[in-house]
Amino acid sequence: MTWSRRNFLAAGCAGVTATWLGGCSGSGMETYDDTARALRAPLPADAKPEDFVRFASLAPNSHNTQPWKFRLGDDAVDILPDLSRSCPVVDPDDHHVFVSLGCAAENLLIAGNARGRPGEVSANPAGKASSIAVALGNGAISDRELCDAIPLRQSTRSDYDGQPLSTEDLRRLGRAAAMPGVETLFITDRAKMDGVLDYVIAGNSVQCDDPAFVEELKDWIRFNPEAALATKDGLFTACSGNPTSPSWLGSLMFDLFFSKESENEKYAGHVNSSAGIVIFVADRDDEEGWINVGRSFQRFALQATALGIRHAHLNMPIEVADIRPEFASWLGIPDRRPDLVIRFGKAPALPMSLRRPIAEVLA
Image 1: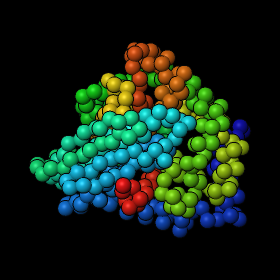
Image 2 (image 1 turned 120 degrees about the vertical axis):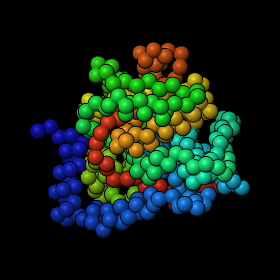
Image 3 (image 1 turned 180 degrees about the vertical axis):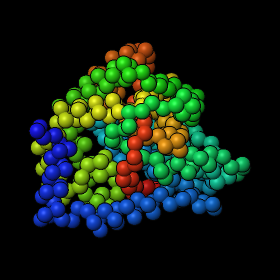
Image 4 (image 1 turned 90 degrees about the horizontal axis):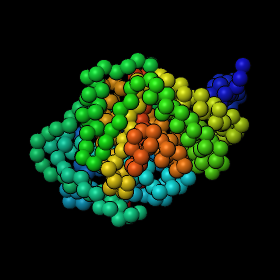
């Protein structure tokens, strides 16, 4: 048998941890689940600004770094980038940061709509100091279905069931993602999906061969519930379907068994089991365009969640600068920048990720 990273993680945690290390499950996991559940409590009928921020902070973001700050005002919330929590190796121009801010803004807007506080989102482009203003008004209730999906949404990094989606589900996903300034390219043809996989593997191989990328990724991994609870950020292994382990053991196993071969095999399984892939492309390659992509993607993700459809990122082809132009040409958009590559399909839920307390994200 060839040992993969996942094989070794499972064997190491089940064999070594259970017999003489302990401390990686039981009460620690129960506390983790309780914390994740409390974070996702329903939005109160008389929601306060802090409640809207809690729902906004449930937005997806790269490596779960949560690169945002929220500034509360009178009937308004400003969303600011927190570049101290950026990932300079995988995201050198902070593209993912501003996509994440767009996701958070859309969550906040949807939550306001669902509580009779309809609002408007405006981007204030200023390079690294760009921000988003969400003005909340009073009016008719809308977006209840999407709001209810906010605490249920997750990036499900597992194999899916391989079954196609109905034409109606695809139509609803496309309609949810529709937003001025953003184009969505849906791919459900298997041959075309195989083409995307080729670029995913090419990008992943470059990243896995880069020690700086691997080190940055490892820095954000939390190998057990205690470590995840201590920071309330990062990539908890259980959220990707991997077993937990003491931090020292997880770090050792990562160094020994993380490889591009095992990662490429994993991503091949992810693509082959997905119902489809969607690529998000902004009309403009700047902070405002990236924010719009985040907003469009978030509505797609919430509609998918409401329909029982999972999603996860496959951003390797757009994260490697030398591969991205070729990928864009292959997609038929040679003069534009693909912003997100997302797979989707049906699968069971995995454990939910955590978020930092609201007090820590207020400016």
